[in-house]
Length: 172
Image (cartoon, rainbow, N blue to C red; front, side, top):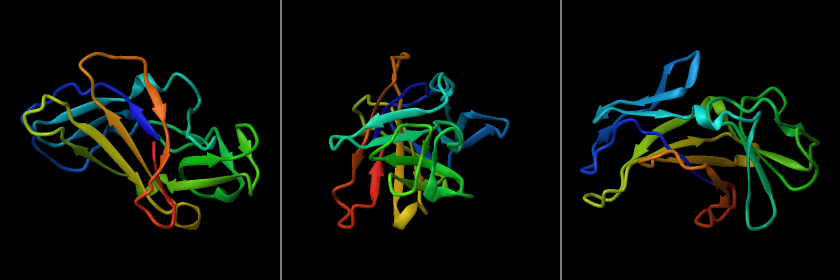
């Protein structure tokens, strides 16, 4: 699933080198800083307007996630006792899915967020890419937050990564 998001407070069209992105304050996980040249700050708070975010892929599967923290408002029977990054469902309605109708796509505790620069000299701003592993049956998920010069209405899409022969990698 692909997220058109916003809000880098600073970015450079010339590209740069960045370290691991982390919340500025653990009590405010929506404000994320990516150290490097230049320092990038992402404000994901505009995405917190509902208890969860959702997208649908071309096969009709639904995906549920939270932009700032682990997903707690939507549950999947197979994910009991785990910190959930995202859930995929193929039947039923949120917020509670029974085992066999859903899958956990990654553990939030494995989060690794980094910056992906736009092509050098293109003027395309960088994206923050967060990867999560440890989902059901080896599943993993990546969320991508794209910067924009103004705050558009967020759009969400989902896809299964066809480059993975086992079909266990997803992008939001």
